[in-house]
Length: 207
Image 1 (cartoon, rainbow, N blue to C red):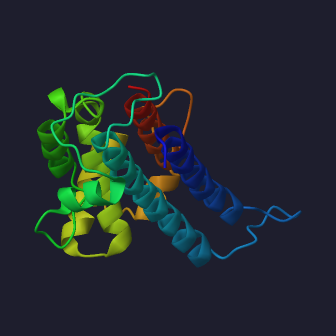
Image 2 (cartoon, one colour):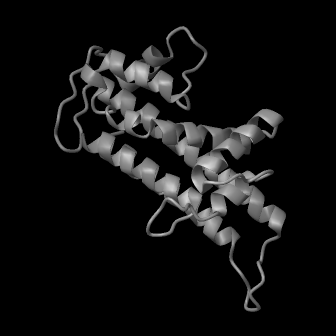
C-alpha cells in the first residue's frame, strides 16, 4: 500500500472511531440518551482502543513502505540503511527474533527508525515531538484494556496533568468525554489526542 493510501486509511479509521462515540451519544426527541450509560461507556472505550490500534497500524505500514524505498507524499526520499525486497520482509526485519514488535511502545519505535533511517527521518522529529502525548495515550490504552490499581493510578496522574487538579476515581470514559482545558477551540480529550495523532501522521507521510 502506498504512503498516501496508508495515511488515508488511518484517517478513515480514526474518523470511524469518532463517529462511534458521536452515535453512541445520540438523544431522542425528549432529550434522553437512546443508549444506556453502560453502552455509552463501553462503546467510547472500544472506540479509543480502535483509534490506538489504527495508529499502531499506520506506524507499521508506513515504516515498512519507507524501508523498501517509498518516497514521502512531498517527494522526499528518506535515506535508509536497510533494503528489504518487499513490505512483508520489512515487517519481519522489524520483528526480528521476537514474537512481535510493540508499536505501542514509542521508545521502541524511536530506536528502530533511528537505526533504519538517517536521523530517523521521516518519523523524526515528529515522534519525539509528541513523546509525552504518546505516554498519555498508552496510559489511556492500558486503562481501556484492563482495570487495576496500577492503571487507575496512572489514569489519575494523567488527569492531574490534563485538568490541572486531582480527579480521584476518574474513569477512562469520563476522561475521554471531558473537555480538554488545554485546547482552544474547545475539544474533548478524545478529540484533542485525535488531532495530535492525525497531525503527526500527516507530518510523517508528507516528509
